[in-house]
Length: 327
Image 1: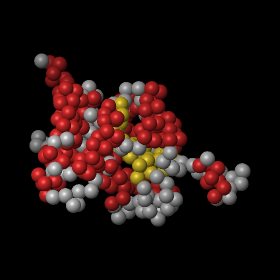
Image 2 (image 1 turned 90 degrees about the vertical axis):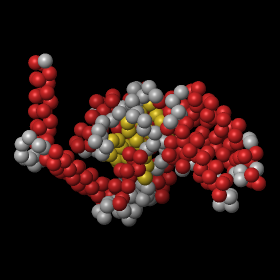
Image 3 (image 1 turned 45 degrees about the vertical axis):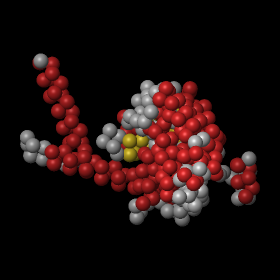
Image 4 (image 1 turned 90 degrees about the horizontal axis):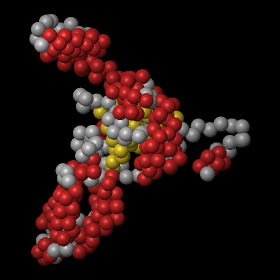
């Protein structure tokens, strides 16, 4: 339907071709993904091109806390078939199998078109990976934050903030089902109490409490297995519960003076993304070399590029291994 509508809109003839989507990566991104793909984040951002195509980013973080993007894709639209194309064609064909096999957790926002197609692709392409909803998007960008608190008193606003933190603890702190059941039960009971309902006592009022209950019953509890921390204790996730990797990459993409702009064509936006990525890679390599030189104590600093740094690490590991063999 989308293809037919678009072809009619641009008055394309039967033998004329149309670009539906494009996905790409590079050798450095492939190399990093193969090593640090345990936790990945999928995010879609707007405002990067004048064709108004959504930009899909597949991002992660290295052991030294640097974020990276393994793959970019300009989508025709945010629909299930477009995301299915990404999960079953682009990522498996463009990224190394070693990285796919290392994936243990994918974090996304609450768009079911995006994560629903990933769940369908898990058995074939991501057999060791699980999906988790970003707790920040779910809680702080969900329907609960649309609740009207402007007319509430100071104490009521404080209580509303306490409720937010209470809910957030289920996503980031609580480790067992027993603790989770106890905590959710206590909150539900407290929301029925005069302390929460009676505005004369500084409570939030029936209207605000009703919105909280609606959020819990319709937006939160039905998806418990995709956000509650106790469900992910056996996953090598390093306590990650938010898609901050993707947000950091998205911010870096746009905040530079030479970053992507809404008036860029798709080819120009692609070039800007590639050039910016290469610049960030060079700067990080230079920083790594500088940090090593700054900490060297036994001999003069003589590392000038990343290859020297790799040689140093290999030499150090080999020396320590040989020393251990003599013990």
